[in-house]
Amino acid sequence: MLYLLLSIICATSLVVILRYFERWKIHPPHGIVFNYIFCVLTGLLFVKDFSHFKDIIQWNGSYYAIGLGIAFILIFLLVGKTTQLFGVLTASIAMKLSFVIPVVMAIFLYNDTISFIKIIGIIAAFVAVYLIAYKKEKEIPNQPKQKIEVFYPALIFIGSGFCDATFNFIQKNLVYADWAHPITIIVFAAACTFGIILHVRERALYQWKNVFGGIVLGIPNYFSLYFLLKTLDTLPWESSIIFPINNLGIVGLSAIAGMILFQETLDKRKLIGFILAITSIVFIGFLA
Image (cartoon, rainbow, N blue to C red; front, side, top):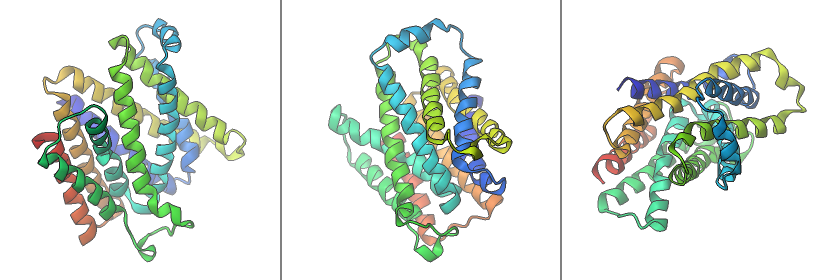
């Protein structure tokens, strides 16, 4: 149970730290690049057998891991911007409700069973994302300069969902269970490499404040996944129970953090969206 609690705290801290980037004058894309550098460095400290990396490179599924890493940083960049524009809770719900995307894909691709409760949960998730994401232009604290920015939460929801589905596919097709940790590092390394390629020519990238931001963000980013994996290894519960509890904890803690640290408020529309988000997680995770 301790590992689950630590995973929830670490995952929640990510959106909180990204919100603080604005106060620390850290350009989110630059801090996120260094974040993945420190994710890789932290992960390497826990590798027991480096020979696995040579075998994984020759594995035909390694391309999926590299593609997933590129997707990770693109989604994280969206999360950074969304956190500043819409707040901690909106970004958190958009990410954590994304688990319904793999659920929907499993129904169509893997003939998973579908029930009335599962349908209600899926519908509730989509409505929740709409309610917590939609704002009239005058309601947005930091006015988006482009209309596309209004759709950032929805893009996070869809993108994170496809990342989850890809990660599940990789896990199901691993040759050896011991590959899970090295592949996670490869995903982080791919994200790091792609981020450097995007910003390598920007002189502002190489400022110490970005390194600091990367350390502060990267360590909990790595441990949010590490503690989740430890939870799956140590708790006697099924993963179908652990993931919804993890998501519930992150959404709830994000709401508390947003209100206490940043004075974020829940208007009627966002409160309904928050309730629907919780309902969706409970319906699909516990009742379906």
